Image (tube, rainbow, N blue to C red):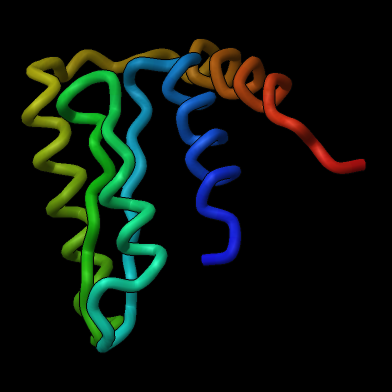
Length: 104
């Protein structure tokens, strides 16, 4: 990972625009303590379920189910199973996207 600070900044911009957004990282490598892992561990959301979930593994076949497990944990932590309309989600993401520095 070559740009941890700009990545964190963009993630926190997303948190500012939606309290339902979460991020997870799947790191497929045999090495532990990579820059990506350190960056992911450093992201603490504004709500308990927004802390970045991390899946470490060297088998790409197992990672998708591990990510699903992280998502299920986060859904349980929210305590809410209320659906949010797509239009509301799109509006929040558009506002966050407009706040980020975009390259031409």
